[in-house]
Length: 204
Image (cartoon, one colour):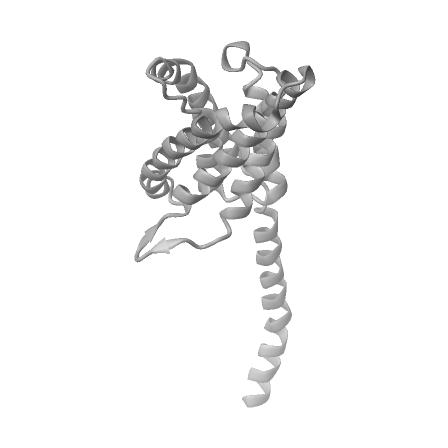
């Protein structure tokens, strides 16, 4: 009887190993962005563009300049947790969305700025940030990513519009500091408030 059990175990071992290997392959295959992930990115970026055109324009009249497109791709990256290449792809799509004339007064500058902002966000999602049970990664992550994007945009814009005509780079950049920090503060609170309920709803 013992010999029979040993023989049966020996026969089932390869099958178990094969099943385990299949599960590992299946998990590896899921590393790419799925259809639901792509739909989520598209919906969030579309919502960000609409909010920037409507609510953003309204708030700009009161001196506030939130950038809902940055908030949208940060929220998407935080919810989906893509790898760095996928984060860059999301940033590229966001930059292309910003090429809509009503969303951008300076063409093409949003492409490098959103690429770097998305890269920063993609890097920071790997860093645990908790205060007690509260996950503050969305707050800190979005603030840093918005600053990276905003100051990249500001530096490129300053070089093209100011330095190229003999202006002072530092003086021109100083004018952007309050705008970028104000936008980053608004975005990080906006994303932190939305991230927690969306994670529960989407079971992320």
